[in-house]
Length: 97
Image 1 (cartoon, rainbow, N blue to C red):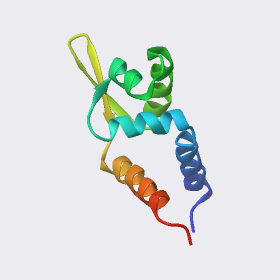
Image 2: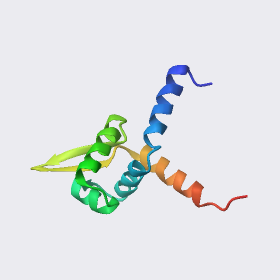
Image 3: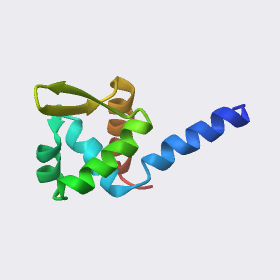
Image 4: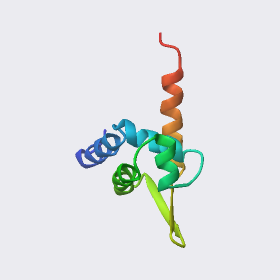
């Protein structure tokens, strides 16, 4: 049985993924790291809107970033995030009973 604290943290985590735009950003980052302008082009959003969503994803420890000169590249924080994304996508692609 989950503790109250852990269940609350998990609910916040899944809540962060409960936004279609953030899921599209995760999807874009599933293949490789990207800069904000590349993410914005991939998900057809403004760079400002993408930056706002990335702040939320960073706060939830779903994405990380690295600076290279003046550029900032974002990536999925670890394999757990990638696996979770892929498992849910696969689950939704299965035929319904």
